[in-house]
Image 1 (cartoon, rainbow, N blue to C red):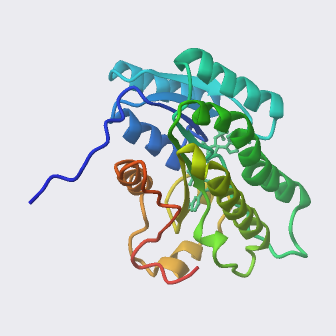
Image 2: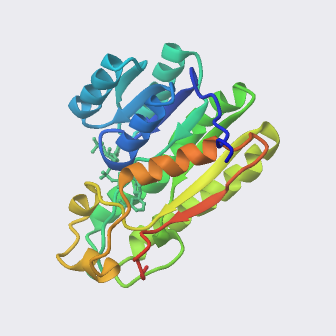
Length: 252
Ligand SMILES: NC(=O)c1ccc[n+]([C@@H]2O[C@H](COP(=O)([O-])OP(=O)(O)OC[C@H]3O[C@@H](n4cnc5c(N)ncnc54)[C@H](OP(=O)(O)O)[C@@H]3O)[C@@H](O)[C@H]2O)c1
């Protein structure tokens, strides 16, 4: 049996938004394990700070940034801080996002706006200011967090699915823009991943059960493992979309 190829990621720089919890935190831990230097951003300073401190103690170069991805000045400052600290960006992960389910008639307009601003405008801002630094490296990677909700729309899922369909559009446009820049663009489309997401989205009791029927969900570390597997492919190979469902998830 041959050993799978492992790209040497040591010394590369990753900027991850939404690193205070869930998938972003798991990505930080997995990349740290491969020697990647980390800029970890979120609104909850104490959470990203604690993670950066923990990873630093374990030998990773990591630092925390307080940033709200809906705020253009915050995003610019986040990117500037990363570049000043590490000299550039190799792996950009605009992961910050949230869910909210409600029918169109009953939807809370403030929650819609917050979600649209975070999941769509925040991603665009992070890309606008971050991508030029990835391009400047001559090669790199961008991972975008779409969802199975970016493929299928369920009852109550209008606004969240709209944000993830938008992320798909952004990812495909970015792929075309980056193709000749040697920057790979991957849309991650997870199914149910247990994190703080369900709590933030106020999922009603029984919803996850209706999707999974008691079978195990995907864990945040599973998403991180898929990202490492993609990074381990040769640079001329791009995985542009990957849907990662729990095996037992029927819908969406
Ligand atoms: N969990 C799932 O089932 C699932 C499935 C498909 C796709 N996704 C996507 O995966 C991504 C991560 O979700 P998750 O499951 O890891 O959820 P999570 O545990 O709730 O983490 C969300 C992260 O986003 C950050 N965030 C939210 N609003 C922000 C803002 N305005 N500015 C900066 N950071 C912000 C949060 O940090 P602060 O609160 O500290 O700012 C937190 O670190 C999201 O884009 C989500 O849509 C999740």
